[in-house]
Image (cartoon, rainbow, N blue to C red; front, side, top):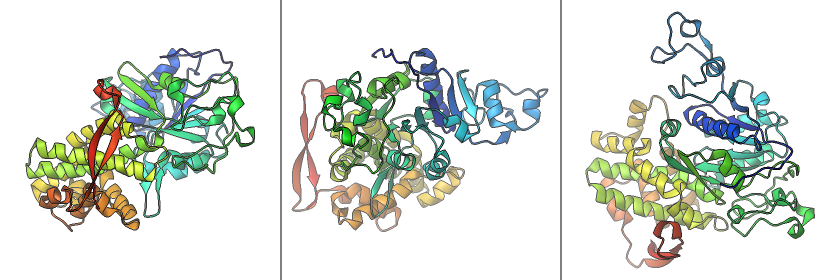
Length: 458
């Protein structure tokens, strides 16, 4: 990794959210903030939704003679005392420079880097609370998997955050099971961040090659139209309605190098790309494919069938991205990155969507019944995503072009049977075949690009 430094101001980092994944990410960035004092303030804030509890009897901190074990205390007090999130990430030591804070306004005050890690349904309300309390030139990273889909549009959670707060926000996603990451078991992730042009307006901020945008390298100050310095493009290539504030020149630019420094650990390898839409779509669409794979597993059709579903699912994920985010989505995001194929494999091997779909077939009950019986009130994201994606595709007359995504929804609705899945995935008579180039030098090594033939129904 590159060594950055020479700036007068340091970045303050805040993690908004403190569940198991939020606490795991907070652990990582706090470790790195402490190791890179030339770039970051040592103390990292973590906003915690306050609640009261006693130390669980299963905790190593449980002591029947201690008031923490016999009387309810605020969760922030317990986290800051034991340096452990005893409720949501028990048994994992958190760095002493990670501060749990129950005040959202205080935790984000003067922070230049905001990391969002909370259930997507709380985004709007929390962003409304943060307005007027964040720096206008702050930048964000959303660790919230998925996208918001309805019949009218597909919206990235990162852009929803950015629009609400008037900042630029990237995305983090990958094959990341929170407990395994927190236990420092090796894993990878993908961070998508397309640096806004104005973040490189200072001549000293020349971008490295991997900090370039999908449309080319970030321009230098001599190339920028200073009348449009606060404009940037969204994931669909349109000029964003958000007018960004230029960061001060004495603060290290938030680019690919800095994000790698903030997130990369020996046990957590972070690959930085510019394809925010592709990373976000991968985290959403893979849940539908996982349900289909679970159905196949429940039928006892074996590993060959599961592999076939994953292959077709991956192709449809690529096609969806290319069709609706053509200016920014890159095929390699799905075929090479943790946020693509790796997350798909993990989800289709043992994730909740896969397991519940498998059990629904084995028990001959609906997946909604399994969800109620097995998940203790938690929701399967794949169910709502399948419905939303179907509505979006139907509104555009594109159902026939995504047989797996649409077929999975129809099975969920009871319109088709799991036994029909192979027929729904099969090429239709008179169908057309097209080539999609998959540039994958990292994966294959021997070639710079290869082509696979992909069926597109017609």
